[in-house]
Length: 341
Image (cartoon, rainbow, N blue to C red; front, side, top):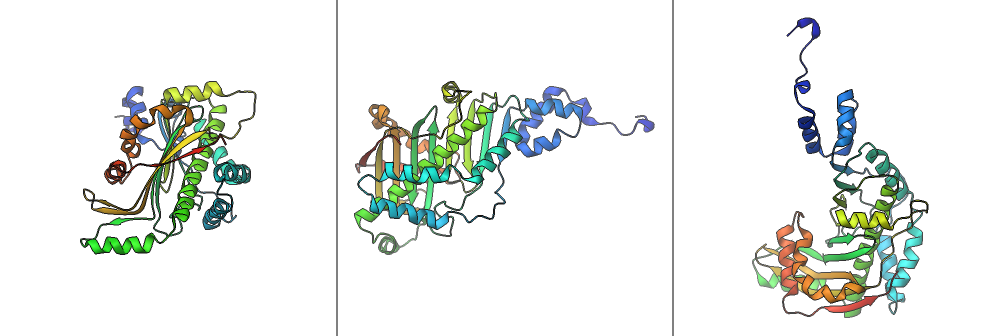
């Protein structure tokens, strides 16, 4: 080494292919953007990174969150307009959400970061909590959902419970939990589950709308897309063919419109107290909801067998798989229909 030239840069000894592989292991989009200003070489290689994960920070807005008021508002509307709640609620709530400045900030931040990458194959976006998620106010509510989209909704699976906890060794404790968590009438139960379903559909369609805005400003064609949230409550999933279908359906000269939900059929399983012996857990008020477009109804029965796979990658994956298996055993589901929204 020549002392006058300073220490060797060992990164210069690595091939571009190996450096690109290292960057693909970094994942975090903001870290990659910072790396791009280190050198001209890094700046030329980082846009080629094909595995990108972006965590969107919380808004600095001082506006109050929707929180429990939003949930209470939904419950009030379900009770007041129970004869046709789904279409009314969607038409009532969505216009209010369409002018949400937090969503505009999310879109601006996301597009600003992602424009630094030209060859994304696997994209993961994590959105911040908005304050209206079930359980976000310290309650015991548990909710997980997964929605698949192409041009529009293809399926949505929701698994929820009024509480999800470690099982006690004494069976009598389960009866106590049932008395504490299940005093509601059948009508109240239905109202609560409809609220869960609507909240998940609104969240899923909003994320799909965000994705449409992003791809309207980007030429990317990823093989997989996942949009989740920091509370790990729900995930929007798209594969390569679904993404291509969405891009083909978009008019580049027209404004991006909100994603609407097609006419769907809903299957709902409910178990007041669901014991999961393999996981050692208990779900009170356990509810499994499967939502699919009406045109795919003929496939619904056979597809129910693979519902446990919807929660692959979750922290509680094995417990959730077990919950789905147990709920599908024997008991027939409630069935509902919903017009296009």
